[in-house]
Length: 246
Length: 246
DNA sequence: GAGTGGTCTAGACCACCAA
DNA sequence: TGGTGGTCTAGACCACTCA
Image (tube, rainbow over all chains, first blue to last red; front, side, top):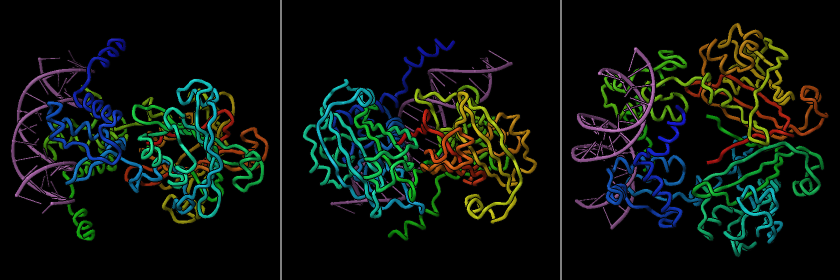
């Protein structure tokens, strides 16, 4: 019976799902850019020849995924990392008081290199593909907190420079969005506890062998396309990673 | 103008929000228990004197919060930790292959004691209030993986025994639900990397001082009422904590 | 006041399930 | 075949923003 169900699932597509996919395609195609207003619900209903309620349901889902945002009385907008609430959207480290503090960015290096087998697999690239590798330290409250090791494909970020990273004060997802039109909409993280190696210990002002939190992240844009890999090593004496389970 | 808006926000409540609250209250009152079917949308619409669409929107939100679940053609049910997909809902540790493996429970102790100031604060209790303290090791794939230290208020879990924990093979949230009618619907976790102390090292078969993941969790039931505190110490050589950011 | 999103209704029809 | 949830429509009215 499950085999029958499987084929039915593939055939049947509610209208609002189809519209959701068409809206997403328009976002991928760049018809509406980050921060811009999209057409009104009535206008989209006319374009797709469906009722306003159906368009609404499609938009509802995109809003719940943080891809669009509504502003009552004004319109519906493409979400952007410029929004105050989105700026540190993916930074899950907070102090014991629950406050984040504003991170300072201290760039260590930004070089062209080739993708290792491991990173290539995570980014759907071929081993040895051209990538850009960034190393930096995030300083919060005057203390070095995270040593980040970041890799992005050169094909999508050609010309990426240390100056751009500095210009945006290390807010990389804002920079990707504004300089390259690439909007990160989600990420997958894998977390472990490891002993600090020499490089980590020095960067974070710790003893070698001290326990640090290792956060491996793959961030992706529309259509779940992975476009950034990063490995963060965090000192968690006074900070913690927080998570809400529902 | 913000002051005006604030009072308006307090006064204005959409119908579906009111219905959502009434449904939640019925759940708190135990009108429908975990796994039971609630009345049909049409019946609730009649009871509350609103249209079916309005009831539907209220239920939609409760479903998205994992509080209710729909079964097309059958009805709407109170979510339960018996559901296959809910059984390890809050366990975020997986092996490198992304598989969870079935955990075995090895109970170390289950005793009556008094709440420390720290735990009391997290559980909204008074310092020194009667609590039950459970220590156990979760074994996955034959290897001890997590040393758990769990505290619940005696007032809500009177009579909790080692036998109950064994009977449910350590699936505590299923046990809370079936034995005490308490359903955990969410949790907050704070994660750090720490060095294993002697007790931890012994329980997890590690060297003292080895880095371990420390997960502090407060789990809550309907109305965000906290009813369980736990501290898990995890060995993350072959496992990792995973998280999806959206 | 015009335009937008937000709520609510009433009713139609489809998909699914169980008896 | 009847009852349930799932989709879709058309239209009304409310709340908000801005010119």
